[in-house]
Length: 67
Image (cartoon, rainbow, N blue to C red; front, side, top):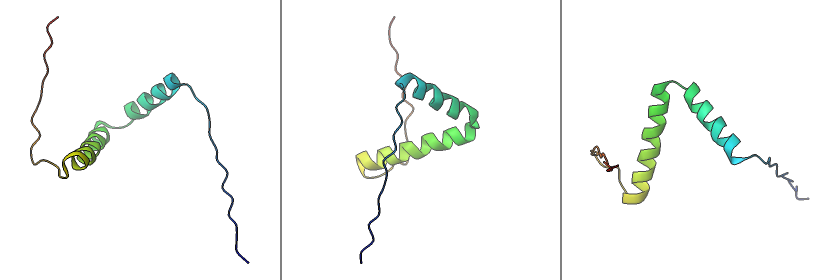
């Protein structure tokens, strides 16, 4: 006899502003080294996905906007 597994979907509704505040509070509670490590990890994933490789150097880009 075959076992049938049932999975219950659980979802909570929340407002977008509440989620943003929770995310900001979460990351501000983390040490700066952990935040930088997460930024590096996300950049590496993004550039590997876009280009197929991670560049050896990433240039510093600054945008200026006239007021």
